[in-house]
Length: 242
Ligand SMILES: Nc1ncnc2c1ncn2[C@@H]1O[C@H](COP(=O)(O)OP(=O)(O)O)[C@@H](O)[C@H]1O
Ligand SMILES: [Mg+2]
Image (cartoon, rainbow, N blue to C red):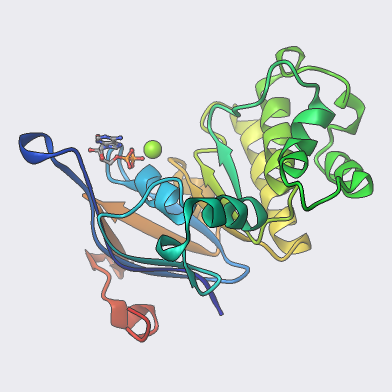
């Protein structure tokens, strides 16, 4: 099953002479349970793609389906709830709340959701899994970069999202910590049957993922026996929904 589908997605920023076409006719399907890496040079449109997938921004043209629902058809309120329940985000700069301790940072997305109770057992399990249970009463400023990113990952997983979107999650980490964090993401992907879409600059890490999506000048490329050419929708399983 495809958990995420981009159909003829176009994204243009700005107006008139300041226009930047960040994405052009993106057709992409991500299968449930896939751990996909997005690679490409700086400015190629990777973050734009991820932001659109998570409904943080809207496409200029085209449709995005998450779990079969077109997110562009949701009201703002519906989108906020849908996003909170289905999508977790991890960014390069961790984006933790400095005034909250580790535990409260992780529980925060759940407390936002008035329909849900904080599942303390699950949060404990997550923190243990990520090796930060002992740090639960510490504040972000007291932690190393790798520890802060683990907290950010735990926070992204707190609502048990079906999809995890990570934008260069290891961009600020040393290579040993990078390997650890990627290992944790993979374990989580398997354990909680998640789909992960991760932007990375690191080709070696991308090679360890289930799939590599290459973006160049706002288009998806497909590399085959040395040939690089735009990916056609037919290769991605037909054009049924687009
Ligand atoms: N908010 C924005 N306003 C105007 N242009 C933007 C904005 N965000 C990104 N861009 C432009 O869109 C293109 C793609 O950017 P981005 O998706 O951030 O690329 P990447 O993440 O691959 O580095 C770049 O040319 C960038 O300058
Ligand atoms: Mg980026």
